[in-house]
Every structure is written in C-alpha cells, then in structure tokens.
Length: 266
Length: 252
Image 1: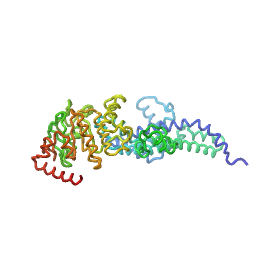
Image 2: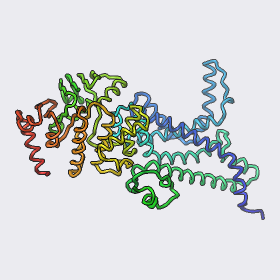
Image 3: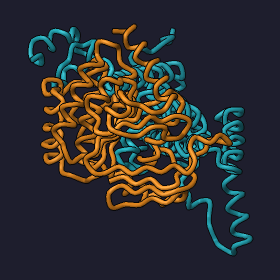
Image 4: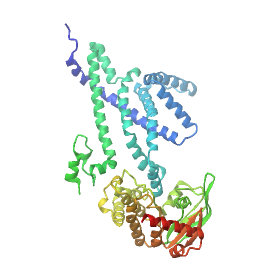
C-alpha cells in the first residue's frame, strides 16, 4: 500500500515553501505599518470629534468590522479596475490595471482592514494617558506635536502593545488569503506544490508548522518588547536602582533578581 | 515681575474671577491662601496659560499675553517665563529622575544632552535626590516625587516659580521634607519670583514675603505675613485663619 502519510515530505518541502516567507512577511509588515498610521489618524479624528470626518471614520470602521476579510480582498481586487476605468473615462488618462502589481491590491486591503481594527485600540490607549503628564509637558513649553511624541505615544504604546501584538499575529495568518488576489505567498505556494504532487495533507502540515513557529517567535519578540517598555513600572518590584543590564530585558534569562543584587545594585 | 490686569475667567457661565488685578515684583515670594474652590488654582494655571483667561492681560518678564486669543508660538514663548509644580506631581512615569528633569531642557530649550544633564544634576542635588537619580517615579515616595517635580521646574530657569498646592497630595509625614526643600530652594534663588498656593499656613507665614487671602475670585486681604496672619482686618480672613488653626491643631 502507498504511504498514507509521507512524514518526510512534511519537512523536505519546508525549504521550498520558505522561499515565499519574504512575501508573507512583506505583506504583514507593510500592511501593519500602514494600518497603524491610518489607525492613528482615525483615532485622532474620533477623539477630537472632527465633524464629517469622524462620521465617515465611524462608517468605515463599522463596514470593515462587519464584513469578512476575504470579501474585502475581492472588493479591492475587482473594485480597483472599475475605479481606474472610471478615472480613465472622465480624466482622459490611460491608466492600466496591469501596471499595478497584484501585491498592491493585497496590501491595500489588509492595511485598511488593520487600520479599522487598530483605530479602536489606539483610541483607547491614547485616552488612557495621564492628563497630568500631558499638562506637565505643556507647562514646560512643549508644542502639541512634542507632547504627542514625547508623552502620549510612548505611554499609549505600552497600553496598546498587547492588543496590537495580537492583531499583528492575526494579520500574519490572514495573509494566507492573499492568493485570492493571485499573490503567491507561503500558502499559495503550498497549494501549487500540493497541486502537482497531490500530497495536500503533508503540505498543509508543513504550512502549519511554519505559521506556528512564526507565531511563537513573534510572541517571544513581543514579550521582550513588553518587558523593555514596562521596566518603568516594574523597576521597584525588580529591585532596580539603575537600569543597565540588558539581561534584564531578556525573557530567556530567569531569576533576574540575582542579576540585580549581584551587579546592578549600588 | 508679574502684572495681571483686568483678568476674567469663566467656566461655562460660572465666573471664577472678574476684572482681577495683581502686581508682583521680582523676587517676591507670594503665598496665596484661601478656601478650596475660591479660584486660586485657576488663577495660577492662567499664569502658565494651562487655562486661557477670557479677558484681560498678563505680563510676566518681557512677555505680555492679551486674552483670549494667542498663537501657538506666543503661548509657548509666554510659558517659558514660569515653571509649574503640580499638586499631583505629574512626573513622566516612563522616564527616570534624571530624564524627567532633562526633558524640558532637551525638547523645549534644545540643549545638548550633556549640557542638560549637567543642569539637571545640579537641580537634583539641590533637592537632595542625587542617590535616586536613576530611579523611576514608581520607585519613589510621594515626597521624593514632588522633589523631582520641583527640580524639573527649577531646571527650566524660568523667572517665576508657580507651586499649586505642592503638599496637598502627600501623607502627613511626607509634607515636611517637601516644605523644607521648597524653603531651601526659595532661599537659594533670591531673584526668583515665587507664587505658592498652600494650606500649610505656618509654612506660608515662614517663607512668604507677601500673603494674599483669596476668596470668591477676589483678593480679600493682601499684606506681609505678619499683617495677614496676626493683624488681619477682614472678618472672612479671621474666620478662615481660625478654622485652619483649629484644623492644624487637630492634625498635629
């Protein structure tokens, strides 16, 4: 009988799949960054209750949250050519859909999706910043931008990090839908390989391993970031007098108190 | 020098003070006392433009602010004339003691880090916190936090120091360390104009060169500590002082 499951194949196909890891990471990072920027804009619009814009933002967020990401991908995929045709007709331009790489459609869709979800998190985080600190910064003579950069965003980042981290992990996995816009990422490549050797189960096992490990690595990195960013509130508990030893930020080093008493303490 | 002319501040329809006038000479240490809700804090916050008055004029040093409209640039320029110590300390919790003090110097005054740290270290020394220089606010007691707040304000070298109930948020046993720090600081910088709001009446009597009793948005009594505390002419002042003396007897 033919092998029911070819376990060797699960691992031997991984290098071939990993050739498409950069595409997956590119979509994830670029959409996340654009999503954070637009999300911050939406949050600021909502907090300041800017007329018209805040209503548009509310409808946008509601729409994105109320429709599946795969539908949104198809909407961008089929919608942009229509928009281009419309522009060509009325502006007498000659823009071609083919000139736009399909990756751009995917990035747009994911970025907009992320921005809607992130905007609520960012809004809550911005509102959690201590008014007193903002006032102190203003009284020192900082302008609004400096207050945002020096006080508001640093603290909001700490508050939003766990939820934004989860959003990032979610996005990384959602990029597996990129194939609907004919972008070849990890999952799409897996489908292509499986289509030729009919070892679907093995390939999807390989993919699961890759996504799982990616997620574990991301979680670790987020933990390091979180440890580093929250040192200001854990300093007393860690018995820190000075913060110098970088091992304190390393989640793989256990028993940080011994480092503190040994080398950092006065 | 501070000159307040015809200042009016309203919240919604409630008038906090109206046509308020006050002149404070350079180097004066003015203690403002009065019941809670009299508008003392609002007045102090107007001097720093944390609250924008509705009408009137404020001059501090070389800069004059005419209510209510002000450009961002002028507002920031005007704020450089005074620095503020807050009731709730308002330290930057993500920054250690040193960075709390250098923050304004680097961001607002655009000093180099080394220069800013030199100034900051001096000021931190002045409030006796040198050994805590690398600690975060979460590691400090309330009294220590407020001393950082004072160092942060002093480091800006503004000509006027504004203290808004600097010890009201502190436990009783921590009040004295902060008050003695303030006293030292005042004695060290003789040219600095100081306006302090406080309910610590004996402290005000001790450090102030001038005391103002403020109630209902008006100056009820204005004079030397001796005049206001020992020979007050106004009934309201007398009543207030009596009530507070009784209170401080109970707490001490």
